[in-house]
Figure (cartoon, rainbow, N blue to C red):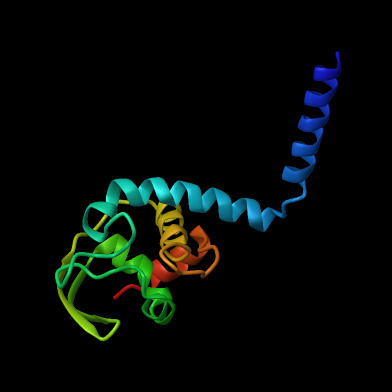
Length: 138
């Protein structure tokens, strides 16, 4: 009987903790966790499990300065790929990142994961923002 009461109280406390999270926090966690799975299946093979890249061939995703400076073009790079030279952490990378057939919400999720992992802290990138950014792709 006492055991059931303790479990019941524990469940009540847990539900209170979960319900105290804001909508923004819940949205971030949802985007981040989904983005982690997308990263593992679509990006990790080249960019590495820790976003470290591959020597001089594939750029790292650990440079928050590059990500912040290019935040509005990241969705375009994920959707349509990337060609040519880019400079990350004073190192030039030249090559081609392939395009992806991801929906805008999936792009938002993977970008939320990338921009909040590997030492980056940039908050949620929403599907609405991705749609706006994709409309500006050149």
